Length: 234
Image (cartoon, rainbow, N blue to C red):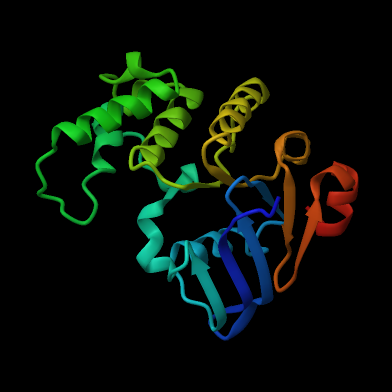
């Protein structure tokens, strides 16, 4: 049966300050994908996600997301940025964090019944409804992680992009988190940037190596973590 392509990058190139960062990148992402993106620091993994989100524009090439431009289709994507970009001391509860994702561009929007129901559903789907009234700085690393995934899921996305969500987390928490992603993958596509080749090789269906200017799509079941490390210098 033919797989349904939902995102397509065709000969994408991107530069920072005249330095060519990604060159002639072509990649297809499918409806049932659990795709791992690996590669060295500074290799372009986060840049690739931002291009898909429409937060950056390619120097050349074409990106199609659900049949349209990344900017138009952005609401169909759930995104979890690197944890270093998040202020965990901000005085806000887990429920408020998730519900805020329903605001969109209208910061003065009144939350509707549907907004509250969607936020509740997202928190319950990750088993953390009991944490709804806790402040961010009262949560453990694994709990914070689940809250922000719930936030990404609250708008019922068709694909979930995660940028190194496992940073500085215990191996057991990482394992539990990947099990959650595996369950979510029954309904939506998953794309995750991660440095842990053990976890990626265990759970991802396919792996893409991004190493500044080059990309290699490699089948998960054909390549073990040692081979991935050799290919990507990860």
